[in-house]
Length: 339
Image (cartoon, rainbow, N blue to C red; front, top):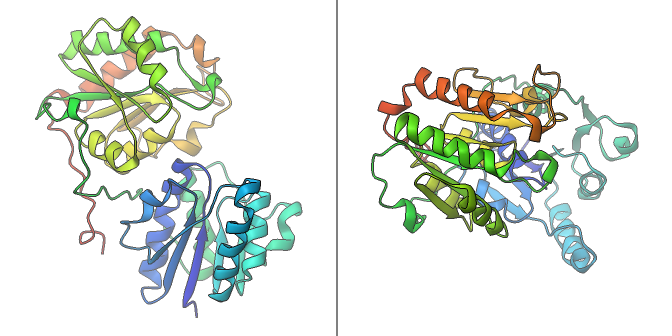
C-alpha cells in the first residue's frame, strides 16, 4: 500500500513538464495517496495548479549558500516517512536526496554509481521522455502510454501588453533562445522566417524570450523586415497566457517548446546534432515536426541547417494543419476537466 509518495524532478523546466503524465497516472491509480513533487524555482509554477499534485516542495539550488536550507528541507521530508520516492533526474544530488529522505521504496536509474541510493531501478531509454518517465510506475501496476503534458495556466495571469490586441488573428510564436549557443539557429534566419510567414500567410510572429535574454530581441529587431510582436516574458504563467494566443511555435530545442506542447500548440523544432528528436518531440508527426538532430538526414551543425529547408517545412505544416483558418487555441487545462 502506498499512502504517501514523493516525486523528485529538479533542474530543467521541460523535464518537470515531462513528469506530469506520471503524476497524472500515479494519482489516478492511487487516488487516496498523498503525492508531493520536489522541484527547484521557478519550477513550482509548473505544478502548483496541477490537480494531481497535493504538495509542492521547493528545493534550493545546489550552491554552498543554500546548504543549510537544503538540509532543513531534507530533514522535514525525512520526517514524512514516505512509502515511495522516485528520482526522475538521477544526478549525484538527487540520488543523495533520495537516500537521505529514506522512503521505504526508492526508485531511480540503475547506473552503478547511484545504486546505493535506490532499491528499485529503471533503465534509461531514448523514447519520448514523458513515456520513459512513465516506465517508473510499471512495478506498481501502472502501465500507461498517455504522455500528454499538463500545464495549468492561472486564469488570472496577465497577458503582455503587446499581445492583448491580437484578438483572433493567427500569430506564430518564435522561440529563438537557448542557454547554450551551439543549440541556437541563427537569429537572422528566424527574422527571415518571420518575414516569410508574414508574406505567405499574413501572420505576424511573436518573438518570445525570457529573463536576461533581452539582447536576443535587440538582435532580432536589427534583422526584422515584417511586423512582429517582441515579448520579454518574466514568468511561466505569463508565458502560458501568451502561448495560448498563438497557433504554432517554431524554435530551438528549449523549454517554451514543451510548454507549447502542453497547451495544445503544434510545434516545429530545429535541433542541434547531438539532441535526439525522438526523446524530445511529442509523438504526433502531424502536429509536432522537426529538422536536424541525432541520426537524422539533416544532422548538421545547427547554424548550417538551411533557411530554405526550414521555411518550406513550416509553410507545409501551416497548410497541412489549416492554421490560416484556425482560431488561436485555448487551453482545456483546468482543475475540473482533468479529474
